[in-house]
Image (cartoon, rainbow, N blue to C red; front, top):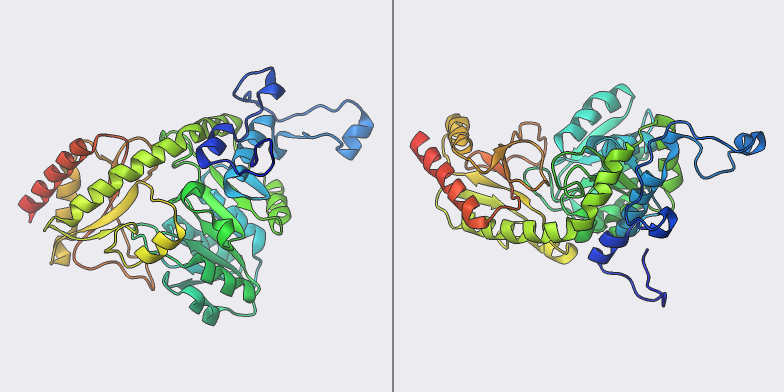
Length: 397
């Protein structure tokens, strides 16, 4: 679903969101695909069963419902194929298991999503894979870290919690020159604001739990690969049996239809609040790559088409011993912002970030780091809520 009837025009992003995985003529005219609950699939005869000569053979290998979502994601990513997995974390771990083996060395950005780091430092380590963490600002300099056994380079931009930008094209070129595959967690931007495969990434990873779902009620991950690496990714999915559930796939497909207009609202509100925070004396720094003051802004402006609804700021506090008390007072005073770890839903959220796991990309100085997810509420109401948090933090100090 990339071209119109003339075959020479690429559809816009919201058209792709509306019509991806959309085949009403296959389902008696109903605009949404049916939810197919499947384990057993019957064959018409023994020969067909022996040769597996039909599209669907068993529930773990796909259904019309999951295929509709995969087709929609492929249209957005420009990928050769997509797999669905039960969570965003599984969207990271399945390709890692697909492409690395005992004795391999991998490079992972130090501003990575913490559960990814935990997987690398525990399970991958037990399997004999060595993980080395690198500075997100390394760019083409990553070639100096490449070894003969470096099989994978993992990127995430912006970085988790502190939003460091990466020069994905430069890193991908250097990694490929060294013989490594490149993966990217693109959950923050979604394929609407950044398309990893267009910048040299081989495997694009997305927590569909976030913006594709949009309603804080579904866990799912998607993994999309280019033509070279799709067969091996697909083989790993079949071998591991980590398939997405049909009801969840249906809900994610439903969420995709409105993801574009939701992201526009998230982006507009987030920029307004981020710039308001920059003006406050009790904010040491705002960590948002879309702001001119952010160190990675030039890369964001060059490579990305937009920004989503999550960013952080540093709440001013000179005494590290008071970081938690000040942050807790701020958070506990909030009423519209819920205290929760996820994001991408309709509601605003806030959390104090723990950055003690960093090895190279150290936590910002100047106070505790507060991460905000800006939801779909009205901005003046959210600002009043944040003002209450600042008053409480000031009183605690």
